[in-house]
Length: 450
Image 1 (tube, rainbow, N blue to C red):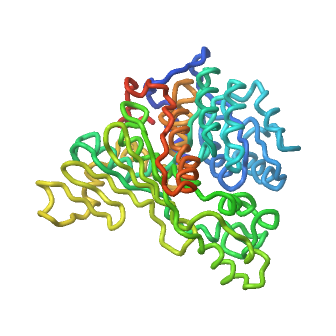
Image 2 (tube, one colour):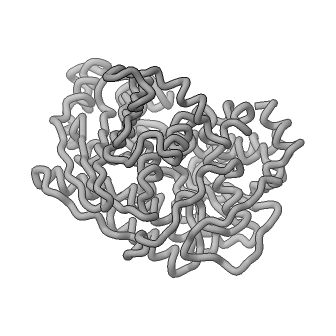
Image 3 (cartoon, rainbow, N blue to C red):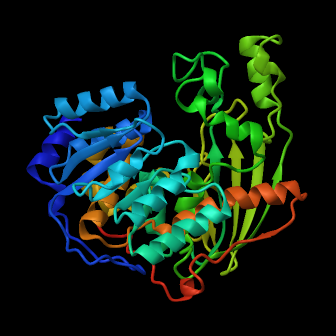
């Protein structure tokens, strides 16, 4: 952290070159050198964003909001330790965030709250003229997806979905390979969120992760709200970590789009088994019926003829993997096994080790800032996603991951829910760009600024 702090102080990120991003809306005010940022939600995720923002010379954290006063106290302590000015504080009730949005000394907001608040807070932020960054997923329903798009277009204010996996080092290297046509014409992708979250969905009400089988009112941190989605929804409720990077590689919303999707779910036994194992058969939560299937598989068809398989697998014991595969006419890369096959380069019918390829095609951003990014959180991804947000907000231009992306990626959740309920019936994807995807140009991902 200290090396990155010194770097940012001595070679301010504010000096990075700015490149205009294709978009549909732009506010009238000019670029600014120092951005006033408010944070709505300073739990574990919000505090991570706060710590990264406090290292920047081009950001003032002017306001914070959270209904948990313990989290407010922690945030204030971090700001004081960074020798920042005491922020305005909000959180007296659930709607107090609107008073933060009314502040003149807030240019942009970072929203890191429970999922059900994401869209309404982002919409309110855009309506208030604040550049909004929202954690994933951005929306829970198709109506909310349209709310993001319609508010962006009506207000002329931008929002960015803070999908950090788009900035993972191997993902950006593979994106570089895609742009340089290593795999040839793209045909098929696989991705997902395969992560044992049982220790996240349950705890003892005192420790955020790793102990106990409580959730809801008796839980703490994510178990307080996240587990209810597994109780009440049979859907892929968390698609964007996998789908976001693939959508960029496939130029979705910029020359391509999602057309339709089918989804299927297995039976759901993992969460019940965990409760019985850790809390006993007589624990009250052993009687809870979880609606969500343990493994949910969705297949998307795109306008350009590719297929994308997305897997949600969070309720069973397993190692972590986002399950990426990128496959084209000339070869493919798979993250599991760190393997690659390129026709004419690899031994026929034999996998090659992917690491030399990842190093050869290492992205310019990681080459330039990787040393300073690594301790920012999630292996450095958090530095790059927040940097893109801040630089875009300072220029008040469309971000790399915009309202149309947030809507399209988040729509997987409600569409998968309907498809599963109807025995895998295909669901049509809304065209959130209203036809403009055909002429929109892809964002220039291959530069070393953001």
